[in-house]
Length: 616
Ligand code: M6R
Image (cartoon, rainbow, N blue to C red; front, side, top):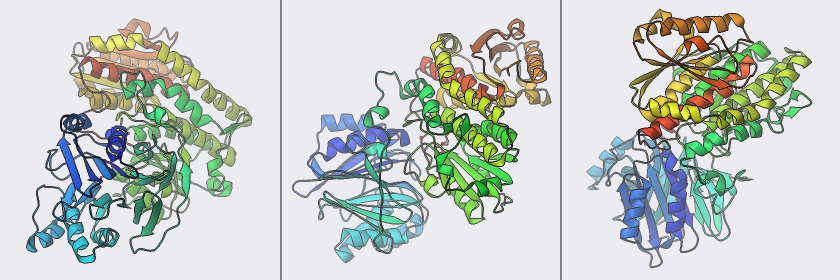
């Protein structure tokens, strides 16, 4: 939820911290701040409510001392509103140490009472300041930042990544994590810490993911990782698969526009290395064992938001191809309903960030109950893959805009690949069918490119519709989750009331919402698939049209049956019905982005949201 960066090395902390925060701002943008120990061994802190640009303006107007040791933070508020006082870093030991934090310290209230009773005082409403004041007390008692830090984290409950520095120990940053991410960047004479690799990828692509309940100490030439008891922990470095340019906006008007343009690559890169002679073999699943996969008798997909809609699309394909029953559940609902889990249950989690707390907790719960867990994830070194038995990475590249776009199509790609892999292992699809579906998948990137090239009309439509107060979305079968996703995109970006419905459900209630001029997007299934389903959706269109709705149909090129009833038709290339979601979702993403832009809204950083939701 918050973005965290730490640095030790040369006298350029401020540049490193601001660069890192800029790349992490997608994680939260309520306030930002930095703390730096200068060459004279003095701690300086600057923090401001608002986006990072407010802090940058403040630093430009009133430059702060630079130094070789620093920490920086960009916040998504939990405890205490987004004010200057509540912004991080928070200070302890009479302003000699600074702490930044991502997560929620659940037992902050009794700790605060304890410190108040001892005469300590607080300047903010945050849980983080409690950790800072506690750290100051323990530093006074031990004279060692590392030892004091170890004592503090041992007392904290909840989810946290904490970084701290003390002016009496320049050249040292300590960090710890529990249920919240922290990654080390290994440099030459300098080292980095970050919520994710984006924090430091500009400086180094060698990284180490910190495990659960571990503490790290970085100096310019050393990295030490221990558990919370102080025992040394072996770590393994990995190479970040993308470079700094991949997380830059380039010449695009927004990260979202850039990321939509990258959707053909997101699909192609996720397919790469997993298709062989018309069959799907996912190498990452080999360790899992074909016999184990073949014995799976139930699959539960867990995810949140857009990832859950990808799961709903994937469900149709996995179930149809493998003949294993698949259910899709929101992670936060799954855990609390006492689901039936057996050793032959497979749980597939989907998460772009790999850090969504609701999904992480659901994965842990499922594994503790005996299920096997596969993670579909876009972020190397993230927590959810580390807590799973296997991971199928989506290779969409870094997704910075808060609204998920390219990760969504990459997630569907990974799920379809999984469905074909499972079908092969179980022998539930003929070789010919496998080859046909593989060919359909391989053709998707070029078809998405085609949709992107002809998107001008949807951009125009969005401008015309920028005064709309409510927009409805209808779909059937795999078009249903696409309707839900189209509505979510519009809600989160344009702050317009939007609802997605299964087209067949309309007559059971929602049709009462239709009045003259009500815009309704309809995702029309291919007439070349189930002719009956196509006919039913065309009937649904007629029903709402008769009540005054304004119909925008997303339909296959040449679908003449829709033309007489639609006010607008957005044509998409021909694809087998199961593969339409890849194409139908693109105009909906563009529509939401363009409409939000027409309303003058920030499409990369919509209000109240953060890219990675690391609180429950
Ligand atoms: O990182 P995750 O994929 O786990 O995130 C899940 C949701 O929070 C995310 O998809 C959210 O719904 C997006 N803002 C949608 O655009």
